[in-house]
Length: 153
Image (tube, rainbow, N blue to C red; front, side, top):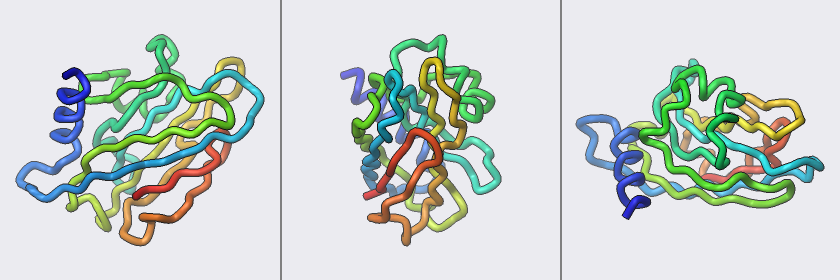
């Protein structure tokens, strides 16, 4: 029940008011073998200029570390109202997130960003930034530090 309510809240946050068309997106990612503890991840949507739109998913069980997601935390102050949460993701492991996204956000200058943080290692704000365009669906995108790859379906 909690997952359904969280998904409903997230859908409401990412579907532009007045827009009734949305599609279900699956974001599949994998982390590099960086040799450290599990990574905390914040997956969120921004406008092209970086202005925050909504949180998709936050992975990692201890909220005291969320301020390490520099860009996401600055925009939200750690507000988890609309976020789905999950466990941290281990080095070399994969993750999959499914969410609804308004059709109006596709090909309109919006982006999916992932901030990453690993205990006792450098933080990676905007480790990966993927423009939400028709051309980017099904394409493998590479991250800069901890994220090896992300594909939107």
